[in-house]
Image (cartoon, rainbow over all chains, first blue to last red; front, side, top):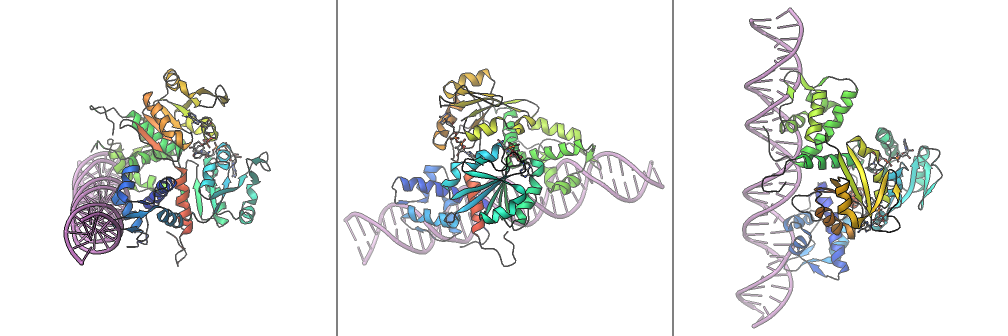
Length: 216
Length: 216
DNA sequence: TTGCATTTGTTACCTTTTTCACAAAATCGA
DNA sequence: TCGATTTTGTGAAAAAGGTAACAAATGCAA
Ligand SMILES: NC(=O)c1ccc[n+]([C@@H]2O[C@H](COP(=O)([O-])OP(=O)(O)OC[C@H]3O[C@@H](n4cnc5c(N)ncnc54)[C@H](O)[C@@H]3O)[C@@H](O)[C@H]2O)c1
Ligand SMILES: NC(=O)c1ccc[n+]([C@@H]2O[C@H](COP(=O)([O-])OP(=O)(O)OC[C@H]3O[C@@H](n4cnc5c(N)ncnc54)[C@H](O)[C@@H]3O)[C@@H](O)[C@H]2O)c1
């Protein structure tokens, strides 16, 4: 039942399943059923099976899934068996926090370079990572084999920076600037918009509590 | 057509509409139709009208929406006419970046306090914000009228920290630790999981390009 | 005032996503 | 070997979300 159009909701859940399997593997568990997985991590067992079914038949009926095998399969499907090299554009507070974020390395990502337009920052070293002039982005990106870009510049510069990234041939971009961006069809852009998340919390707080004391 | 169950997708879009209206208002525009709004900001006009219809009738047929009026309505609906005071737990790199993030103040949020467990950090000043002992969280949260908490501690401490937050009576929490958390029914929890976003990019890069050169 | 152009609010339709339910496959003990 | 038990993979149903279409309302020009 290999579907050729996988929804992003599905791939996001694959990340979660992988995390669960890593935990189970580190506990020494050999097999796990979708039902156990679901109960333990508050998921839906049918959804687990359906998500996995998009990519093949990984389970054994009556037994469940072999933890290490499924973990390896998910790692492969998510492309985490290849290293990725990340370039961060904008060496400000957020860029600096991301530059030495150990969470990257845990999942086969390495921050290879920072880029900034401010002459005062160019040449600096932040953690292990050097700050380059953004004017040389394309050249350095090629030299450093960067395949993932992170936008951490103020919102008004985000679109031109995205175009720079695009021109350098990079196909995967994560954007932290709170603004929607237009990317080419062949570029995967993920925007993490803190403002929207905050305003969503604000909306919740503005709702009157329900009579039974619950809010949702 | 007031619906009583508003989806989070809808409220997220309200944030976006508000941002658009602020831009239009600053340009001096008096009215705008859903069609113009949609074309200009790459949205769908039917969806705009439907989202707004959840909360009342704000438009005038044949005219559109009055920019300033609609902006004020959305500000009110999203609870952004009230100030929010934010407490950040975990004064590490991410906590520090968030503490003096000007984007907060733009949208009626003030970072009131940081909290940490590390004695070396307690008492420090980061930007305008003081670092308190997390052991005094409940007391300081009350004194500082904190109504929004941000979790910026390592993943293994996130759940106990959430329980601390909950016990202090705070109902809105944003979590940056890459782990799912269990919160009470009356607490709104938003998790921003960078790992999932990164792995989603990795999945995309792992897909073979389609024959026509497009990937999606 | 009337007719025309505009644009909302809303219903009906379509698509996507989630959940349910169960036949088919596999294991295991007797 | 066989029947009982487990658990997958999947089609069908339900729920949620998005898009299109249009009657009703409004403004405006003549
Ligand atoms: N600080 C946070 O906690 C935080 C959280 C979420 C989102 N963000 C968003 O991330 C972005 C960066 O935030 P920040 O707080 O780090 O800002 P910052 O001002 O500390 O850093 C921005 C950096 O970008 C550089 N820059 C500006 N234009 C550039 C260009 N064209 N090319 C390369 N570099 C350029 C600046 O020199 C500066 O070093 C903003 O869009 C912000 O809204 C920040
Ligand atoms: N740094 C990043 O760019 C980044 C990006 C996304 C998500 N995250 C996540 O955010 C969290 C923090 O990341 P970081 O890079 O700032 O880590 P960090 O190690 O720099 O900071 C963590 C801080 O939390 C404090 N702490 C530990 N236990 C605590 C407790 N029980 N109560 C209060 N404080 C406690 C530590 O003393 C430390 O100061 C992690 O879960 C990380 O995965 C970080």
